[in-house]
Image (cartoon, rainbow, N blue to C red; front, side):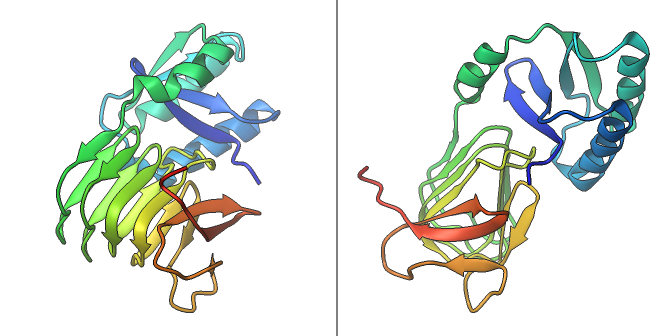
Length: 207
């Protein structure tokens, strides 16, 4: 089931997106829970954009107060839905790391991340978008850090300590009950969300 609150990246900041109909109390509660669950992934003083036709002035003030608790700033804007969807990924070009990420390192990006090397045990990769590892992944990988359930993780070999996509967490693969390894092979693998579960599937980079 989709989360009620998600964040989408843009040049000006992060857009607060309400994914389905809900009353204000539900939205307020969902926002508080969302921020509490991923507070470490927001930089202080990040601007959060909110479409101006969804809430009254009083409701906007309440949401602003919730965001202030996490050192986030609310900015009321008029958002074109079609433009948001089309330009979101383009406004956040992928972060490309042309080396192996060593244990103890943490790589973070609001957009997607491409690693041209291995991700060693003890390393952590966190992306607001997708993660693509041209090597062996044995660290912790977290895609869709702002709640995008359509995010994915690709690696030439996926054997991380932990995989996380949006709100779902799994360990892979070693007889894990939380992740389905559809077809173990030497080909690259792609981790996605399917039926509220993280699964692995073969991936062909040539397509």
